[in-house]
Every structure is written in C-alpha cells, then in structure tokens.
Length: 153
Image (cartoon, rainbow, N blue to C red; front, side, top):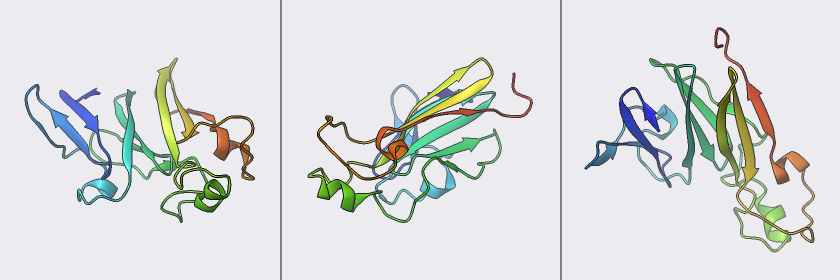
C-alpha cells in the first residue's frame, strides 16, 4: 500500500508494518503502537487501505481495525465482541474437528467507495455445510461494515 510516499507491507507474526524502498524492507515507524515492539504475538496486519487521507490497517486474529490520521493512531475498532482469547472460539473450532485457530477473525478486505470505507470481516477457515459450530453467524461468516468519517466526501 502506498501512504505518505512510502510503500507499506503488513506482516505476521508481530503485526508490524514494514516499508519497502525498492531494494530494502525495514520496520516502519508507521506501525500501530500495539505492534511496534516487534515481539511475535500471533497478529497479522492483513489489509491496508487509504481512505480520506487516513491509513487503515486490519488485523487477524481479532478483526481489529486501526486508523492513522497522519499524526496519531486512533483507538482501534473491533468488529467482534471478544478479545480475551489469543484465538477466538478455540474450543468450538476443535470440537468441530477444525484447527485451533480456524475461527480467527480478520478484516479480510477494505474498500473505499463513494465517501465511505467498507470493512469486510471473515474467519480464517473455510468449511462445507456439514460443519456445525454453535456460535453467532457473524463470527462464522463475517459481515460488511460501512465506516464514515466526518468531513469525508
């Protein structure tokens, strides 16, 4: 993603952002504070978007969306209610015969359209109709959220 004259790249397992200058990849000072220490914490910066001059970064495994307004990082938006577990719904995933982080929640897409930013969430896995996991449908299948910023047209 291009932002402020820099090419940014998301990363796993620390969630840090990196800058690429055409030859070298190095840690970016634009990394949200929760991920700037570079210590692996099983987070992935999966989606990047620029909308209304703001940089947005979407994360896995808790579908957190961070916004940088050009000078400060804002409190993240979280699209799922629970951030208490390292990976959400671990017990439910394993009971259904899936890998423990199958229901890790991600911001899988960010789309700027007609003055709004749309954030699409999903879980990590894919499954067929025979998998029955007793959790809310939004956690299973994800949702689309419309985000508006005051003064953004």
